[in-house]
Image (tube, rainbow, N blue to C red; front, side):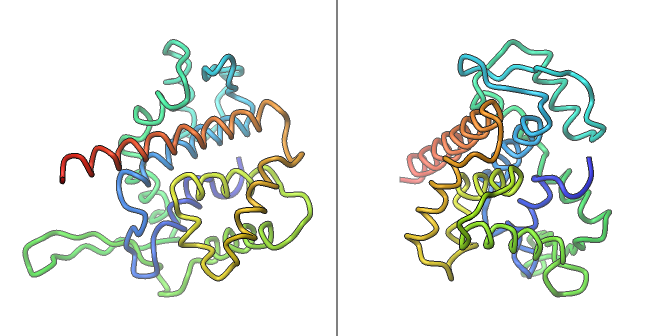
Length: 223
């Protein structure tokens, strides 16, 4: 599997130029779990059948992160996508960040706030937006301002950003009505097989359910 994974692109988009996660936890965690499942759907390894996620092809993808998730899903009983999000989310941000640091896309900076509280940031090594992040942004913006067909990976990435609420941060310069209408149009478009589209829709719904539930719990415990 060539190029960046959806997990890599989501992390790059979620971290600002200062290396801070502007999406917050656990939204990023759940979004990454959804990204892993989307990658498996795009690779034709999983499908949603009777609202349950099932492995249709257990052959390894060659990507450890994806293959571990594939084995986990395959070893358990069929569950709804939302039931896998929390299970697969654990440790994902650190693994993806380690990979991006290892590839040189990001740098790891550790210090202490007020000399007491530990803090780790992940800025670009050059201080400028990584080229791979710029390319991902350009793909999404081109899809939103255009009216032609959209490739499956770009549609999936747009779906992810919408599910975790990152779209509101990424596309502030675009008219809200246009973004909303185009997102709906892309979701209904003929850019992937019916099985893949169904899986992507289910993953988006699963991530939204997970993040919404977490937000509700947070409000309840702090009020």
